[in-house]
Image (cartoon, rainbow, N blue to C red; front, side):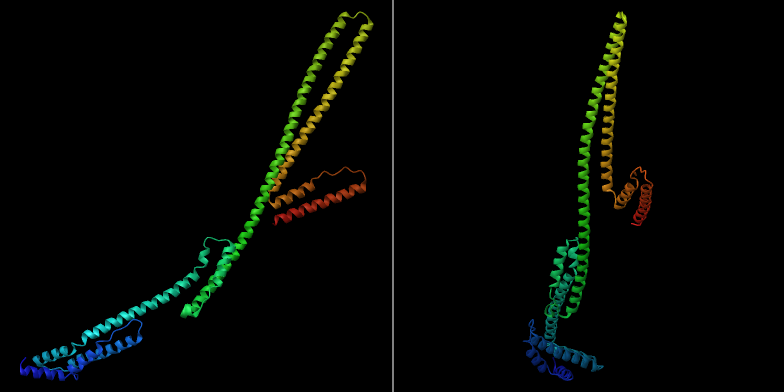
Length: 365
């Protein structure tokens, strides 16, 4: 560089109101500064140094723009002087920016993680009712309520979100309490349904056992009836054989009778034989009547058992109507005394009113 150029360069430097020596001293002073994580003192020192360097750089640049000279050589010299002047501090400023940005990012991440951790805890409180998504038993829901109730919301743990956490806890407890009440109601209703189902099953089994017992009785009576019919048939066949014998004997007597005595003997014999036949017929008729009565009673018992079974399974309103109808259709006794007949008529009229009243009440169920 010529002497003239040196003079021009030094003149250009002088225009920026700061010397290269001052810049180098500043760079040397700040060179040892570094941002230490979690050290606010080092952060503030680096930040303050960066601000000084930034002011120097922007001040030089501003002064460069203010010194507007037409001479091309002077402008070139002025810009070069500004570049040389700032060269020691620009890398240092860039390093400070990078370290401060890294520390800001680290601190921001710590804050974000802190807030997210609290948010996760609040979300867990909100999700307490969801833990009961499968409609657990009332005792398990109560355990969730106790667990959430005992959860302490402290300012150290939830910090500025304490009020929100308390509100979420109260909302979750309210929802769980409602779930608990609904579950208790369901379990009570389920217990009633189960008890009724067990009662109906017991009634069904008892009715089946009674029907089986009546069937055994009916089968036995049917077998007895068939045996009696067989015996009666044999007796009838025996009577027929006896009649044939009588007729043969009669024919024989008729053919051989010679005297009036023989005819009387024949008449006596026929009378005796016919009397025996009459007695056998009466006995057979009595036995047949007994068999028919037994069959009728067995049939009535079976029908009664079937009616009891169907009535037990019917709804309550049907049972009430069946009961009052049974009272209403009871056979009334035949009375002779007028006062007794009047009392019986009053009973009949009252039963009619009771029957109508019960049916009207059942219709409103």
